[in-house]
Length: 143
Image (cartoon, rainbow, N blue to C red):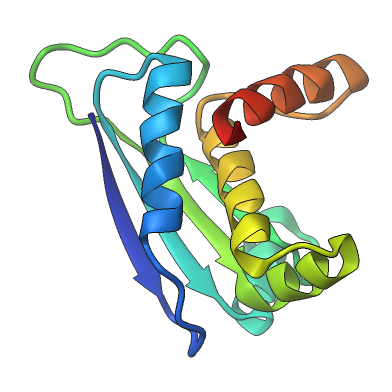
């Protein structure tokens, strides 16, 4: 079972349940036995700082994932509670993207969180093949 830690550093009220459903579905689809994922909702200003510091990109972004393990085939022992990583989502960017895509903020947050979770599990989108695989898994999780 994945332990899910949630923090909202914004003034926007968002239910933790949106993300808990995705965590549960991710456990089943990705066949994860146990681990820990942290999610923090932050402002564009804060994600801009993180993006600049860690990715050397001087602009805000929608989601950042910091994996504490590597690869898709992570080994677990019975006593492990593997800290998989932390995900940061900009609520400001998520709002803008939800408007652009003409869907709810909750749906956009679910998409961004799923994207972040897949990064924690070693999936990437550096080329077309990787992107297609990542999209396939995201679709399964979000169904």
